[in-house]
Length: 517
Image (cartoon, rainbow, N blue to C red; front, side, top):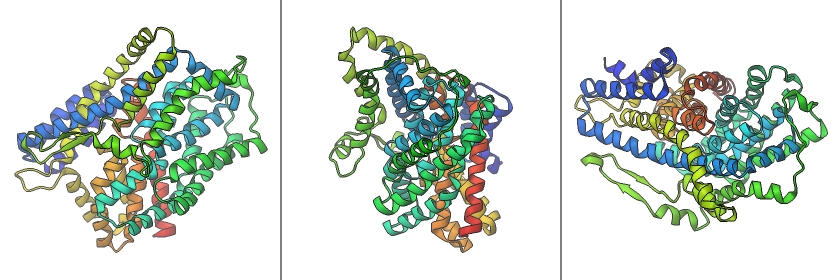
């Protein structure tokens, strides 16, 4: 029963969503109530700890909803002002071919925004943009979720490594660099499969009339252009910038490859048009809010500028929630959602009837935000209950540690083949790759030493697994689905992204085993 209780938060979500096909919000409510009941009776968590973990989850859920609110408001502003159509036309002129658009916007665009901000920002901005370009909403969300995996290694200016692994395993800088180097060497051959999978799934599932074979070379070039660039930038610029810089240099290589080896395409194959004449001023005006957001994200996250420290210094602190040992701090000015909203308010005065426009934008995004809130306000407390289950009267470790220890004991001899899967499980549970690394890095380090494996290699696989788990973590699924207008379809999206996640995990583990093990 103890084992079942530890597995309950995972099993119940999968059974209720996939097996019974319940609505996501209903599934989260049932999973939360059931897991809390089991934790109280069998894990013997005190009611105070249960309540504090739930409250922490609610606070985190509100920060996620704030980010979504900003992204949705910016999207609504662009739609209400007609600038979204201008952006669509602009990208169509760069290339009307959706196969190239999914590589340039879906692969390199996601990598660039992940490198700057992370934490769900790429899907929140780029999934709606792909929809505007003519991609079906389900395809747009699927593509951005698959793409938002390999770049996570050095996403948000290196946060998964510099905070997740560094604090989780208490490693010095030299060892962190060794982990980063080991990871990019594995990803050198593993991550190029991702744009290929994106292309194959899009053409097979959503555009079967669109020839896939001629574009495979372009997908491979895009994949290797990114992975080789990430390795090079890690050596030149350190651990904070590989994702962002590799996205730029990789896009340049991919664009030049298209220029010198054009991909044949007939515009009517996917229904794109290119008839509207646009001036340079129109294009600049339409792109200005997104460029402003990118600029704000960049300057607010560069450590050598004063803005990051200033924005993070204003905090809402919640120490020792309800008298427990659980504490949480929120820096509202540093959240991406705040920057999205500030951008909208900065551009509103340039429009006629700004108050009416703002009201129309809010009416546009409110239903999507509420749809996501019903899920997140139960999903995040479920996650935090799972993580904070270490406080109990049964003398048990936290549920994730209990499961990981059982797995490590049974599979120590083969741990190189399973360590990435633990990282993916952590991302699915905790909602982000950084949290997965914080959760399991120390345990991975202990298991590596116990099994006589290279610690840097095992921690690199932990990171790769956490990146892969980003494709299926519920927080990302709910957020991306909501901004694309797909509330309640998280189950369908999970089915689409589970396969690519598994392929990426297996390939990364195989490369580590054969080449570096």
